[in-house]
Length: 173
Image 1 (cartoon, rainbow, N blue to C red):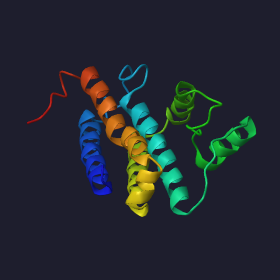
Image 2 (tube, one colour):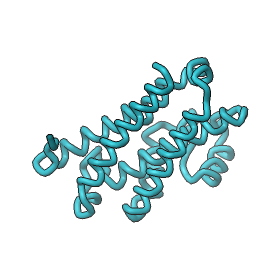
Image 3 (cartoon, rainbow, N blue to C red):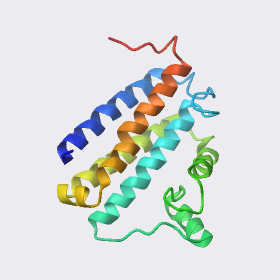
C-alpha cells in the first residue's frame, strides 16, 4: 500500500469513528458494557493512548532515534511518568494489563477533554506518517501496524458501539 493510500484510509476511518463517537451523545458516553466493561468514554481514552504511543514512535523514527521497548520495571515506570500511558510494546505487561492501566487513569476524565486529546493524537499520528518517506514506511514494515492502530482499531470499536446501542445508532444513509 502506498503512503498516500494509507493516509487516505486512516482519514476516512477516523472520520467514521469521530462521527459515531459524536453521535453517541454525552448522555450515553459513560454507559458501560460497550467493549467488556468499558464505556464509549473509556474506549476513546484507549484509542487515544494507542494513537499517541504510535505517533511518538513514528516521530522518533523521523528524528533518527531508535526506540527500545521497556525491559525493566524501572524503565516501564519512567515511560509512564514521561508519556502518561504504558509502553504497549513492552513484554513486561500484557496488552490487557496495559489497557487496564489506561482505563484506571482516564476513567474519571471529562469526555470533552478525551475527545480533544484523541483528535490531537490522531493529528500527531498523521504528522508522523507524513514525516516518513514511503521507503521508511515500507522498509520498517510500518503499514500493518499503522493500519492496525487506526483503521482496524476504529472499525473494531465502531462495531462494539453500534452493537451496544443498536436501536439508537442505526447506520444513517
